Image 1 (cartoon, rainbow, N blue to C red):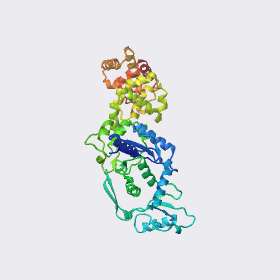
Image 2 (cartoon, rainbow, N blue to C red; image 1 turned 30 degrees about the horizontal axis):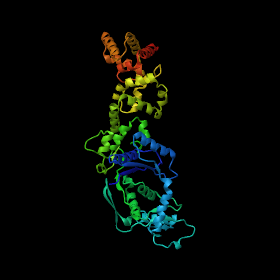
Image 3 (tube, rainbow, N blue to C red; image 1 turned 120 degrees about the horizontal axis):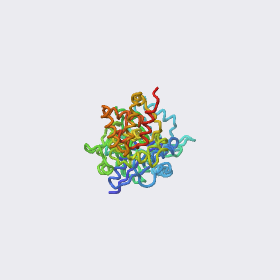
Image 4 (cartoon, rainbow, N blue to C red; image 1 turned 45 degrees about the vertical axis):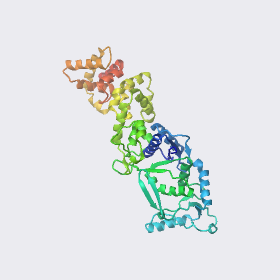
Length: 476
């Protein structure tokens, strides 16, 4: 068997959305698991809506997800000459014809079809007419002479056997009146010329498959193996919207998801392999196959993605998470302020804090938020809950805790915890009643990583200074 070749072919009219990312992943896994190639083709024939910004975002999104392609990126528009050549070939062979129907005639056809409750289709009026009857000054389109009887069948790897009656499929346009090729023609020619053996795409392209098969058949070309995957819906079963997660991949990066977690989440969105939920990349590549994709729409679930991301964060080594932390800063509002304070000392503190930080966070955003105490300026900005706890009595207690900690010379989580336990016992207090004022004074929040980890990470000098700030504030 020849080498398997898949392709991901996005239209650059927006960012790489989550459905496109899953399609790219499925193409990538199928090719990688069989020693094949995945090609990247930018379908930029819609010149008005295609932008360089979108092309850059698609490439950036794929690279961030770790999905690599083989060979150079193909830009469909650059191949328009080749597409026209094929249309002219079909015309010369009598497999296509010039159609001079006016816009008004086409509108009338549509209106009549609507009135009769029929599908909107071209009625073939120029199919067998002599071009000498053409009205002067009208530039024709070129249409495929599609079969009018019988049926068109696609043996789809996901949808099964799909059948269309040819009487319901009309003669599609190959070249517009201005000489530009249509999407339908361009896709078929490009897939053939690029040697694509397997087309894996959303099931919104299923009807296109029947029309494209007509072009393949007219040219005598082999039709690639087709797989049309169901679209992604929201948790409630409705069409995926922005509130559900219909966002660009870059939005998931900015929300603090790790690429490995998003890959794992996407592969399980519509595809199953027993009860397994967690897949390494190599396991995905080995296990992925098309018949295991379900036919019903997959449902996007943020809670599941968060849980999966939390798993990947806990499983990541601390140094890798420090790098992920730094990478994220350019994509979040608070990032530049934190980036300005990154130096050898704060990086070392972040690395030291990471075991405690990653246990509590489900996203990198939560982790950045929890790590904020390392980068905070004095005096600390208190959040409202923390401020409410800073009563005169609490401030007095903070002063006494500072005095007790000042006696600790060898500073680490064990020695500071021992000092605080001794203080609590001597003052008939529970450890929690000591820990919370410490937490507020050292982090400006009522929740944080383990307080003795915080003490160790910040170090003696910073801790005593921050405690002094809150103990010294005049409560009146």
